[in-house]
Image (cartoon, rainbow, N blue to C red; front, top):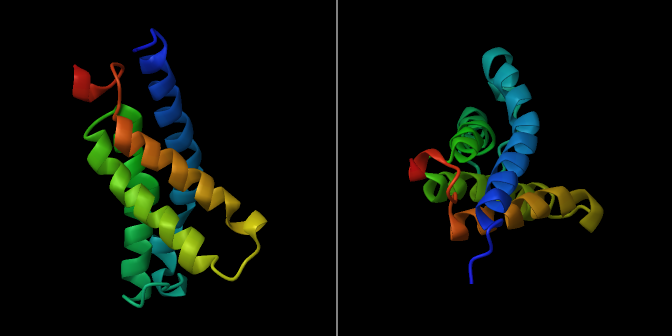
Amino acid sequence: MKNKFNDLALAILRVGFSGMLLTHGVPKIKILLENPGGFSDPLGVGNTVSLILALIGEVVAPIFIILGLKTRIAAIPAIGTMAVAAFIVHAQDSFGTKEKALLYLIGFIVIALVGAGKYSVDKK
């Protein structure tokens, strides 16, 4: 049964998770412009490619998700980026260190599963 607050809750989830992830992604734009070779390469595809993939997952995708534009598809790069962060970049770290990436991962999985809700560009 659909609760009258479900769409509001989805909007809060989308904007909250995506807005917070942007705080991690936006500083990477400066790295791309100044020293992309200094970015880590956890997938072995090259530093610059890894950085661009991170920017797609942490900047481009969250902007689409905030707007509610192609939300389910946009959540996929965010999910991938957070999975890499949790299970590759922080694989040897303590749970406390990888916890943030795991929380983002769970949030974006939920967004991918349920979609944007009524308060989104997709529903207009």
